[in-house]
Length: 202
Length: 176
Image (cartoon, rainbow over all chains, first blue to last red; front, side, top):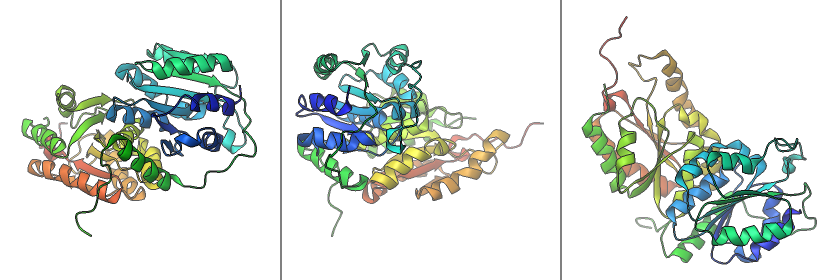
């Protein structure tokens, strides 16, 4: 599967969800695949932080579906989160792991899934996450996205995708700080809450 | 030798006054009584984590929801959490407040804990994380409250370091 094709399928199903995503080629792909979700997406250059941060967001907003778009390299950086998620079983967290079997953004050296031995969804199931699936087919990806987004239970898809990045995409120009402020202001508006209020006085 | 009931009470009171509703933790020995106290607190969701880096990332996510979280850990955890703390704080201005035990402080009777004291302040300085060392139980509550105020105004992390005096841990003399 091509990651960009998967993203367009997933994006077509999203409306009121919040998304936290990883670094690398998936940033510009998601920026283009889901233009209507840009403010609802936190673009994080944080290997190992994506799924934990999404879990934290799901704890604070238990009524809102939270989507983590992680990667094989990112998840390997902190496999322990699978054990924590298994114990905590957040009902509103949907995790997609783009498994391209390489560290694409630095030229493509292999990750630990490249040899065909290590299976991230099996690790997740072994941790105690019942609904963790490896997907290699777009139709199945489409079906499981529907299921995962509707499910009131923790749901993980490991999507086996090509190593290529979709060419000719518009680049995202903002940095992590701007992205954070945009995201926080969007959450404030969506949820009717104050995260960054005014200073005591001007 | 243990964290006194008063110290536990002041810690929980400080967290409540700061409107903290999620506490991630990786248990350690100096503040060991606080972990079951957090786990049994009905108004605070206690989340045991597998390492401190995971814990601070979860806390960062809670911040993004408009709620407040704290990471409770040994000071050695600042080494494990350095990468996500740098990414969250320096890279995205997502603040995380930590309460950590001061292992390796003066009076430390354990050889294995000495490196924790040696590395803690240089690590915090390198990560540009302000901190307050708390030696008196009555200072725990106001320090927690002020740390959250400061962290959320500065959009930067803050570390509250609780010493052995707060846990009545350090023995008067070493046994031979």
